[in-house]
Image 1 (tube, rainbow, N blue to C red):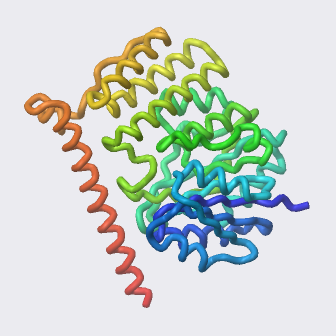
Image 2 (image 1 turned 180 degrees about the vertical axis):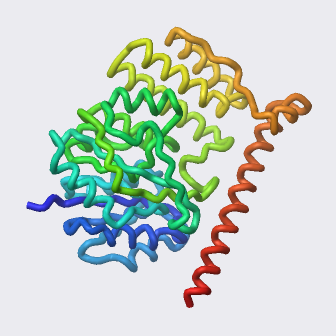
Image 3 (image 1 turned 60 degrees about the vertical axis):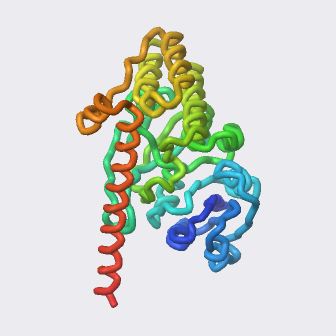
Length: 337
């Protein structure tokens, strides 16, 4: 029998994007699929948008706001699929993404093979998405995948994965305690349960950059800092459980060093924990450094103002780029008419 693929979409205040996301899910060329949208207590028109698409193939449910991880767990509890396609409410799939990966599954060794694909950033125009291959864009063992991710500060976007139901059940539910990097922690557990990662270059995911509104944006949120560091600790434990060696410890140290600036100097308790963890790994962390554009502010006015300036200017830059891209999209629409 043709396998059923469940496309699971958690949605919170995604009124502006959800229709496009649902169209990309419905447009999947794989013939047997179910699409489940879980509205996580949105305060805008997200639920109304989702209900416009309700059909025998698209089901919509709503719950009080509990966070993305809880919405994903609810979606999984409702699905019947042999394979799971996670899809955030503002991202897009190429029409043949699922089909390409299912074809790869048919030649895979076991149900424990985990499939990934390429992904690219975009704002309003998917045609302008930038696909930049990384060291994760190839077939890898679970331990090698984690070494590259953590040692080189790389990641795969959530929707790139296609996961068998067996792997999903072994990995367990999403961690509802994590306000950020819940996807990173979750897919670490999927990786621990899989026997290999197979990269399918023909599939594509379009990752919409929505600035500070995206779940992964940390900024100066204490709760998100705590969640991210908790996820980092889990990452390290997971990698060392697969292989405790000089190369895995080096990857863990690089991982801690890269992200230290996220917590420094606002959260000295987390910085102290990171330094202690580095010592346990047989290394030490250097104090983080700012680029020359902001280091002079640090020297004159301190770390606090320098980091706030960096965050504000980055938000302004992305806001300007998004507005420009949106204007080009509207101009293209006018020309088509």
